Length: 199
Image (cartoon, rainbow, N blue to C red; front, side, top):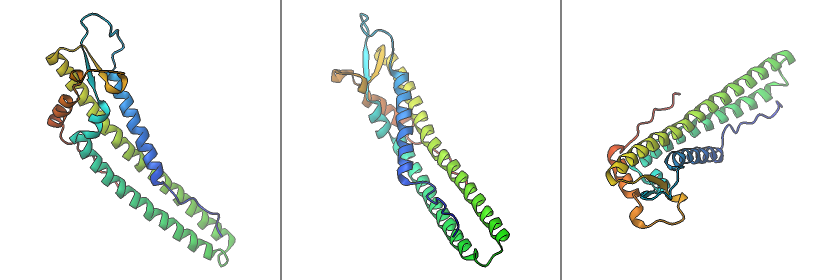
């Protein structure tokens, strides 16, 4: 028998963890952009509250991009599954040939098999990174649009600081501009077009 190869090139759980990390990273980046570090106690300072998480989850662009990424993910996992099956089949056939092939011939075939396995793993990692990058790109586009919209609203509504709702212990409802930001975002950025992964 050839030594056992690890065919589980990527698991669904692993993908979810990467997606969760990417989402948390993008949210953190946006929060750091919006959270003003100056004094909020200055006389006359006007504060606005924004529910960033709600906007990232509810916007038309986020939902549209999410559907695209979900489709890309399904195609990616299907491809990985096919390659795993291919590796298992080749390993099984190679094992059967061990007793009938000369040692040097068998070792050569086993080396070629291992090289193919490594190449497939590298390809899977590259495509997984491209998928993760698509997620990060999506949130970067959305966060840039949100920042621009909030900046414009600051001029219109004359507030000085926009604070993420998650950072506020208490805020009056009339300070919340989330719905206005969300409505404008849906108007300006209804969809996001993501590039297809290359085969």
